[in-house]
Structure formats: C-alpha cells, structure tokens
Length: 161
Image (cartoon, rainbow, N blue to C red):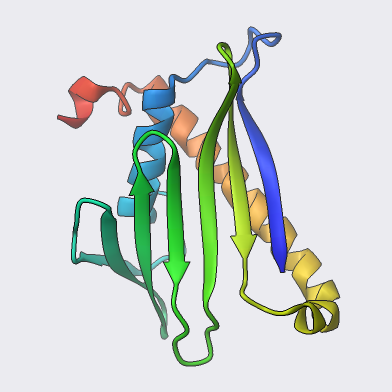
C-alpha cells in the first residue's frame, strides 16, 4: 500500500486558524517522533537508543507487540520513519514532509509505504482502505495536538531549551 495525504497547517484565507511557524511545526514533528506517548494513547512504552546527528533508533511497545524503527531527521524539512522487517512485520516507511508552496501557506505531507508489492496490495485492498482511514485520522490528531502545544507555548524555542 502506497498512500499519501496532505494536511493544511496555515491557510492565509482563514483567519480563524492559529498560524504555526515552520520552526514550531518542525519542533512538534520531532517531539512526535521523540516522545510518541504524548500523541498515541495506546502506546505502552518507547525507548530511544543510538542517537546520531541524523536521527535515532527506538523501540515502541504496544502490549505484546514490539516494533523497532529508525527515525531519520532532515532538519526543518522531513521526518522519516523506517521499520525494518521483524517477525511478522514487513519493512515499511512513513515520510512526513513540511511543504511551504508560498510565503503564508504551510502543509504537512504524510507518505506511507507498507513495502508490499502490487499483487499483495490488490489482495488487501479492502483492509488497506481501513488502514488509510486510520492513518489519516491519527495524523489529523497529531496536528491537533501540535496546535494545542503551540497555543500553550510549548513549541517555542525558549520553552524547549
């Protein structure tokens, strides 16, 4: 399943939406990767290991399910999650990209790739539609939480340092 969707962050035509800066958005996306329990209520534990200049490795535990992944950070642009094949879990990825097509507009693009080939995708089409919907709702929730954190000043540089 290859799937992507776009969430508008700043709409210059809608004064009712609080604007986020690219820096606030970036800090929030990194916080989501580094502290996912703030965003995922059913996550039991997340352990970060092997921090490097490019990102980090982590292990997330959901009950009996344990998932190891690598987070690659391209500052102010992209957060990439890479899950290697493990047990019954196939290799997959999620790329979260900040897009600014104009000075006053800001978007986040979520790109999912579950690593399956076209034949597997065709066989799983109905199931994949449920996954797409769940992913999109989860991503909307992430942005909602980022907006709340920004409104409370928790994504400002002075708060984080």
